[in-house]
Length: 118
Length: 112
Image (cartoon, rainbow over all chains, first blue to last red):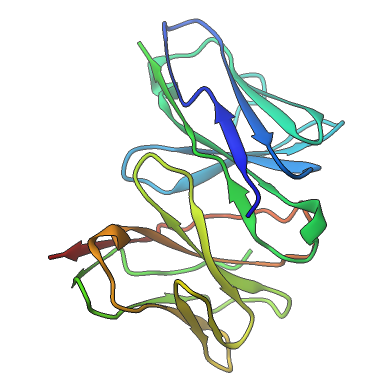
C-alpha cells in the first residue's frame, strides 16, 4: 500500500519555541492531508484538513495561529506548533488519501510524531 | 458524519476468534464502514472496509446486516500481536477531502 512518512518521529523542545513536523506521501500524490492529535489512552482528534495550494480548514476549537499548516506540494504538508507549551505535548499523526484511488476511502496514516514540550 | 459506538475494551485468549461490534444507527446511504487498527505510538493501519453483507481479506472479516446500522469485525485465531485498539469508522469515500472522525475505539487485549 501507499506510504506516508513523518519527520521527526519524536522531538523535545523548550516552552516558547516553535516546532515543525513534516508529513510526506512517498509514492503517491495527495491534494488533501489530515492532521490529528492524540493524547495518551485517548482516540485521535482531527485538528485540520490540509489542502494543497490553499488554506487549511481547522476543526472547531483548534487555534489556527497556534498550529500553522502549509501544504506546498502534492506530497508534503507541514504542521508548525508555534510557541509550544507543555500542554501541546502529544502524539501528532498525519494521513492522506491516494488520488489514484478516488472513491475508495482508505486513508494512509503516518507513523506519528511524539512532541514533548518541557 | 455518522456517530459510532463500540465497546471500550475486550479481552480474549490466543487462538480464539474475536468479534467486535460497532453500532452506527445514523449511517447514510453512501457511507462505507471501515476498521482501523492502532498499536501504541504508531499511526492507525487499515484493516478492512465494506458497504454491505460480508467482506473478507487475509486479516479479518466484516459482517454488515441488511439495515447497516451495525457491523462486526471478526478476527480469526487471534495472537498476542493482535493486542491493539480497533476503530470503527463510517464515512463517504466520495472525495479525497472526506474526513475521518475517530470514535473511542475498542482496546483489545489478548492473553496467552
